[in-house]
Amino acid sequence: MADGMDICGLARQVLEELSARARVEVETLIVWTSADSTSWPPPGKAGEAFAHHSWITYVAHADGGMEIRDIGWAG
Image (cartoon, rainbow, N blue to C red):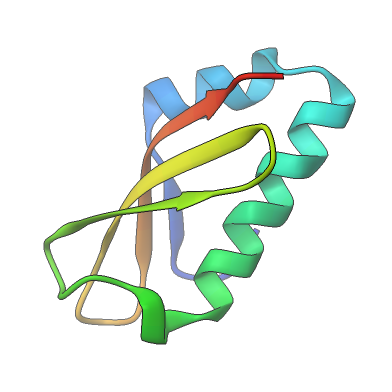
């Protein structure tokens, strides 16, 4: 994962329990979202990003970091 990225406990647990195919989609979504800071909410606010079968919720930080709070999979 990218520098400045923190995946919180429950989100990390969900990521570890996903199948390999699902994990690839979620990790790709995280990388894609972290690379496009122009789409982030203001620092300290929550944002969401969606892929074909997955989603993440995250909080952007003023230092350019991102905290992944939740991961979902509907595949």
